[in-house]
Amino acid sequence: MPAASLSATPSRNPSQHFDVRPLDAALGAEVLGLDLSRPLNDADLARIHRAYLDHGLLILRDQRITPEQQIDFSRHFGTLQIHVLKQFLLANHPEVFIISNIVENGQPIGLGDAGKFWHSDLSYVELPSLGAMLLAQELPPEGGDTLFASQQLAYETLPAELRQRIDGKRAVHSYTARYADEVFKGVRRPTLTQAQLAAVKPVVHPVVRTHPETGRKGLFVNENFTTHILDLPEDESRQVLAELYAHSIKPEFIYRHQWQPNDMLFWDNRALIHLATGCPSHLRRRMHRTTIQGDVPV
Ligand code: SIN
Image (cartoon, rainbow, N blue to C red; front, side, top):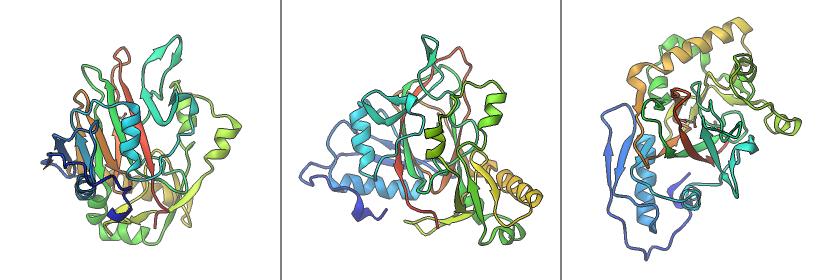
């Protein structure tokens, strides 16, 4: 998304004073002093956008904001995507998807195992997510971390032989790739209706994508949704994917986020994959996610 396409906000609002502090890690920056409950102007948005592209993940600290404010801020970066699991959309705000292990009156209030495997959000649709924002609502006293891995660093450090094997290759992504595993393991996952299944037909994307804004190349396969690489025998596809997955999560590409109250993370799904580590089931965790539509990966 070119900076010029960020939806305009009146520039007459005074600029906010905030700092962007890069993390001592492969990716990510902390943003301190920004208040998303107050108006932003074009210069603020341009700074946030630049930092987002430079670091792949922004940790926006201390955001005491409403669902409407999260939605409004997310919309500056593009159209919002509505998750196929309609039962976990926030009432009156379908743009907000609830990720939670909390069960109320016998019913889960959100998707409990979201992010259990490394993934890029919505890689299983034609227009995968540009990025996502995840706002902490209720955090457990222990656990519940989220890990991010740079797929651009992963690609840049790929052994030449493996890089050659995936050159020009395309892979199939499917929302249901792991669904059966999870059901068999007794994880609380809702059965998909015919309409939901029809909305998530498998799609094909390049194994390596070029970031539409920075031009950097990165791996674009993930263990959650990628089923196989096209034009390779099944065994070879499985073996290549296994090698890519093992390489893509080397410790030097990873940042581990330990959540603080009112953190909101904004990450680039075109450059990173992520994983939720989960927390003990007797502890409560609730997060609100907005997901921004990206473009066709090339
Ligand atoms: C996600 O995969 O979007 C959820 C990550 C998390 O809950 O930490």
